[in-house]
Image (cartoon, rainbow, N blue to C red; front, side, top):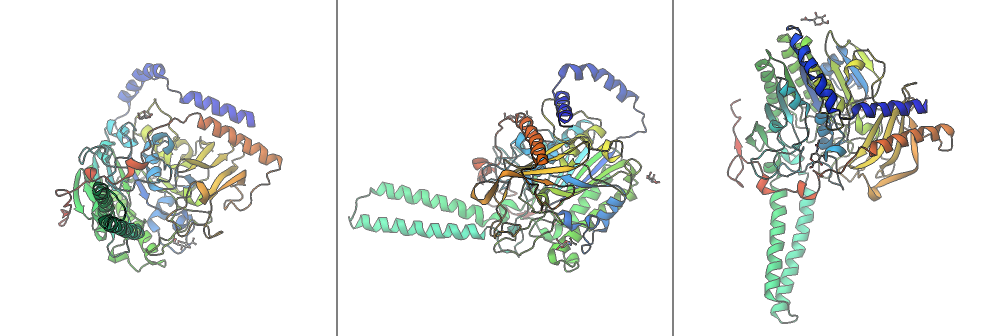
Length: 592
Ligand SMILES: *[C@@H]1O[C@H](CO)[C@@H](O)[C@H](O)[C@H]1NC(C)=O
Ligand SMILES: *[C@@H]1O[C@H](CO)[C@@H](O)[C@H](O)[C@H]1NC(C)=O
Ligand SMILES: *[C@@H]1O[C@H](CO)[C@@H](O)[C@H](O)[C@H]1NC(C)=O
């Protein structure tokens, strides 16, 4: 079994190799086929919903009995529920980059790197590289109308305030309405600042600095020691500029990061979160109605249920789980509103509808902030813990009445990256041939044509570090998972890293498992009982996985790190601004 496994891998690797001559040769036939494609077999639409930070334990159809999610449950009833749906990363920026490109973030330079985990500002030069291709871009070339409504968090500019090199409209979307960054607590002025801790630290150092300068001035003036005035002056100047930079960056976070854009225009600065739920619903409905006569792709990427859990008045106090539950129930309502429009317009049967979360729920409450913690059901770990099941196993639902069976569930291994080849194939496009695509076409699996997905192995990164790997055996469907590293919880046994915003991926805050831990996920989904490392099965399974890691490593190449250092530092020259910088405030959506 072991060797046949290897051969399947080798064959697959060969199939994936770019083969220019072959694809050129079949091009005329493809064109011929397209010509004879019956006129009434129109291409499907795509409506892709993505929640932010929603855990697998927080949805009715995945076993939560106290949060009401009737609309998500309805989707599952009318479609296929994926029970082993895995994100490529456990944080927003890398996970979303992988979703849109079908590639592991380590291939695109969008993985966390040396502790830089996500894009930290709207005004940074990092972002989804220009030469990466999203599925939206390929569908756009196939005549689709493509829209994205909600959160982006994949960068905006490279070199100037208006080059928009990473903007959705330069990555295959015709229409964008939403936040170019992510929500931070500072976006809701009624909440304590997320950056308060940093500001306090900075203020401490600033006082230290001022005292030092004064002392130097006085002792030089008294001729006690002899420091040239020029040096003192330059030191004071640079120090002041340094502190001023941080004061302006951190102190005005609300204006720098909480921005609403409509296409290339900044329309609310700062964004009014109270309005967002309704605006996103109205924008999605409008997009669907405007485009109902042609194939369209709509990506609704919710601001829910990321902190600060801003929920409109109508939904506050309704759930059994405080603001956190209210926020989930509001998102479910939004989904219901959008599904209703599709039904009214008679589009449901022509549309593949998808629902997922970008990664697992956040388990750490933040210092100086509301202590709202999510739930990942029976799975261990959460957001930011790349190798732990709770961080990467998320709800995943596919509905397409008449094409995909209703009310079924699929346990085989699937990835959010699978949406990339799936929609491209259905939309009549071809996959890029000059790079490795890690996603696999989902249709044969969800239609019940094949019993198992094409994924044998999946690699679970925490930033740039490989923390764990899973293997689903083709013969038995057993899923194994090996952990090489995992977070050191604080306090020990807490299941989370309290006192930190998220767990670290390397260094002293991480446990290095030697020998590595092996779990049989199929009968131990909560990863409680590692196999003894001296048994034959342990050796056999870890060896097969080790070989897969070696093959995977041989396909990786160094790429520019988009989230690293200068690429992820607030740069006023790149700040989207609706006025004349630094006077950036406006509210142009008042009457909509
Ligand atoms: C449902 O979700 C809430 C919010 O995360 C959580 O507190 C609760 O424990 C969950 N219930 C179950 C049964 O998982
Ligand atoms: C949509 O497809 C389902 C399943 O095939 C079918 O029962 C239903 O009648 C169809 N609806 C419309 C409006 O065609
Ligand atoms: C994009 O450009 C970078 C930097 O030149 C390169 O390392 C990377 O391989 C390119 N990616 C693709 C998909 O061509």
